[in-house]
Image 1 (cartoon, rainbow, N blue to C red):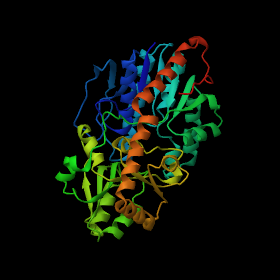
Image 2 (cartoon, rainbow, N blue to C red):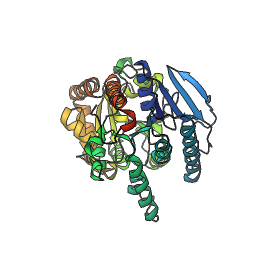
Image 3 (cartoon, one colour):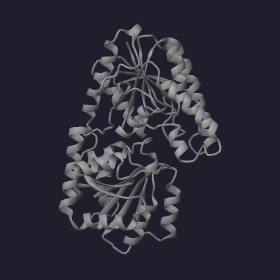
Length: 418
């Protein structure tokens, strides 16, 4: 029996889905499972890099497919890249998968479970749908199918058909799992396995020992950070409004690290409004993550409320690992807000509440002991609830439970809680 992961990006790529899939794949290989990964030969946002077609790393067999490389700069080019990966992954599975394999199908590219489902049903193999971002719901909520409602309905039908394949659905949040079950799936077919961060890879770094704070000239400031993707699922007007209100306060600086769809608009707004209290930096290499995340005293995480059932802001788990407080901007009933309220590892403000965010930042600046206490709770939460080893243990139980079933008569409804 092999465990086969399919995702467009994999190690050494450092994008969010790649890091999560890579962590599980390498973890299962260390526990003695026979693991194969099907991915592309690309590094996210690095079109000049071409990875080897075949490679064994950390006990994991990697099979990389040579797809088109138009990149993420246009929807048409991205769509072509998606289609080629779909087609090549389908034919790879038809040629290489056996009935006793367990295929873990991720959600990059979108609807990969549909084409993979066709191949896996043909081969009578088990499919575990690992849903990280829910498509087409996320695109529908963002308005991309406003003029193509029939296409959206067809995608929903196809996606739901694929989720009914022999195996399980794994969701990263209770909110997403509840949504899936409301669409008619049995509760024992849908399980929750939270995302996590590697507490060895990302460790708390004290302000005085942080070389990036010195390098960037923010040693003495109270630093409000944002680190990761400036994506369509996130909102930045609230943060920019708070920065505007705080720009006369020389003790407070905003540190924005990363890239993505909204970065150009955010930088343009900062220039237009003369927000010199905002410092922009590119994504940092993996070896600098502890200091990069530790450069901030508190981090901002935002999510559009209409996407709570579709998306999980994975940056939250890195913040926990770094031992920093979080201010969540979004739905007070959302996943991150609930965790913050339950554990006391940060604060919440509503979307658009610029004055509320300003007050929250000043409160933490003026109460450093409380801010540090929230950071300590964050790190403790990571080790107790969202650790890498805990996640690998859960995946071992899931895969072992599926493998223990009588393979010719496995049923989709026989789930297992991690």
